[in-house]
Length: 292
Image (cartoon, rainbow, N blue to C red):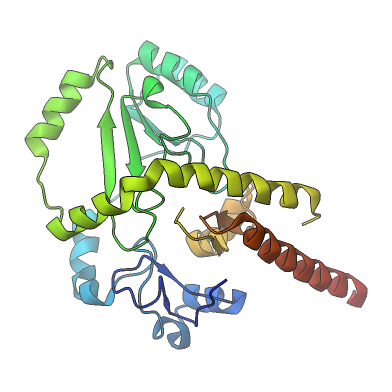
C-alpha cells in the first residue's frame, strides 16, 4: 500500500486533488488548530475544510455572499417529533436528509417522510451520495435527489461536481423544473466535464468491487473488539466537527470515530492492512489499560 508524507496530495502530484495526507492524529489536530507547521505543508485538501491556495484571495467574498444571519434551518432528530410539530400547526418548506447518513450510516424512514410530505405539502430532498444510485433507489420518495459526483462517481479524486435530479412523478415537478430552468447558469469548467465523464465510465463496475471489499472489511471489524477508488480513512468527527465535538457526541458521533471509504484495491491486501491496524490499536489499548 502506498504511503504519503504530511500535506501531500492524494493522488500524489495532483494539483486539484481533493484529498490530502494527514498521516497522524497529531497532524489532524494540528490542522484543526490551524498550526502553521501543518497548514503550510498542505498542497491541497477537501474544499469543505480547506481553501485552495489559488482561490484563497476570494475567501472574504465567499463569506460575504453566502453567509446567513439568524436561523434558516432546524435540525430534526426523530420523525415522530417532527410529525407532532406538523400536526400542531408548524410548517416546513422542505425536509433535507441523507440516505444513508454520514458518517453513522443511519437511515431515516423515507416512506413515512414521503407520506408526511404529501399530507403537509413540503419538498423532500434526499442526498444519496453514500449509497449511490447503483445500490439504492431513493428517487421514488423524493422531489429532488442530490448527489456528490466528486466521490465515488468520479473516483479519481481530481475533479469536483454535483447533481440534482428532479422526480418527474412529483406533484412539484413542474414548479421545480421551471425554477431550475429560470435560474440555471452553466458555469462548469469544460475540462472538468471531460475529466468527470472519463472518470465515471466504469462507475457501476467499481461500485460492485467496492461493495465486495466493504463486505470483507465489515466481517473483520464485526469480529474485532475495536468514497474514492482507493481506500481512505480519516478521523471524520475530529475533522468535520472540531469546534462542536460534544454536540456531535450527543448524536453518537464520538470524537474517536474513524471513517473508512473503501476502494478498489485487492481484497486480500486490504484485509492485511486492516488486520495490522487493528492489532496495533489493540496493543495500544492494552498498554493504556495496563498503565492505568
